[in-house]
Image 1 (tube, rainbow, N blue to C red):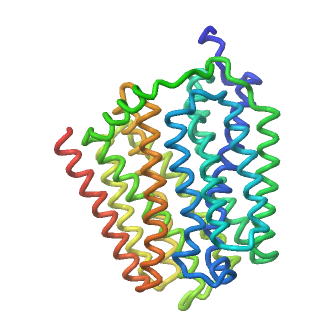
Image 2 (cartoon, helix red, strand yellow):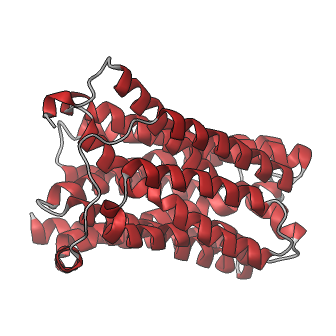
Image 3 (cartoon, one colour):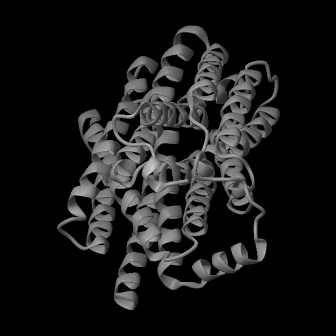
Amino acid sequence: MNPADKAVKNSQRFKYIKLCIFLSGLSVFAQLYLFQPLLPIVADHFHSSVGDSSLLVSSSTIGMAAGLLFFAFNADSYSRKKLMTFSLVSSALLTIISTWIPSLTLLIFIGVLKGFVISGVSAVALAYLTEEVHTSVVALAISMYLSGNTIGGMSGRILATVLAGELGWRTAVLIIGIESLILGIIFWKLFPDSKFFNPQKVDYHLKIKQMQKFLTDPYTLRLYLIAALLMGTFVSVYNYLTFRLEAPPFSLNHFYIAFIFLMYTFGVFGTMLTSRLSKRMEQKSILKGAILFMLGGISLLLSENIYIVIFGLGLFTLSFFAAHTMASQMTTLRAKEGKSSATSIYWLFYYFGSSILGSGTGYLLHGTSWTFFILFLIFSILIAFSLTYHKIHHNS
């Protein structure tokens, strides 16, 4: 195939790619964090602790991490479109099935399965875009995908909270499952097949060698640890803030709590801000600055004034997305070859951080207090900051 045949800006093919890649991001992230705002209701329903119910969020991200590890080796042996369609449709069916599950343990198991199948989209979406889209519009296509991720994550959480408050949590899960199934069918019908990729046999030996290289390089290893710590902190805050806001002194109604997730729009600004700043500043300085602002934002969550808490959450969210965008960019640029292996490991650490810290801090909060919980997260961010410091001085 001639590279000149790649999808260009105003072509019908590019319009379909852009629409479908946005819808895929929307579906994946609406489902992945579906239970996050519902944790207090589900904990109440199953008479479980804060930490146990939080396993509903962690199970999906653990499944996602396991799936990404599997696809890091095997993604290139499947058709891109078939893999993504299978992921979208099967995950939607698992979400629909969740509606009738009688026990928390089984619901957690389905979460792991769902995370695993859904990872098929994340594993190949960016590779598909760089293969099929003309270089002049790759950045635009990727930003559509990332916007779908952010908006999906945000709208899924808001919709789940509002619907659960009005119709019960099971109905909320069912509606989001049906919606995701419809998105999957639209994707299957409209998404263009690959022109520039054919499934091929995987050289496992080469893949393992590449991964070893990234895991033994102090520069990339520190970036991976930063991703795990920051994502774990971020998920912890959004997992348990609903519990905090429902209780005194705030005692907020579920309807108002739903709109806390609108803070995700600050994430979009954080990503945009990073791409602007990276033209003028050193990448490592942006990463350090973003982590420091995260510290400032999370410290304000200790306040008992709702306006200070909201401001702190906005600052924390914007800074997290800026740091995550920068760290993932630095990882990709560091990898001269084996970019897909380097980014797979990055996502693997990212989701493991989300799963382990995201649930672990739930047990910590249950056993101690909100203040102790926030101080522990501040400590985690400080470790991430110290890693940037060492990395800069030993690898500049």
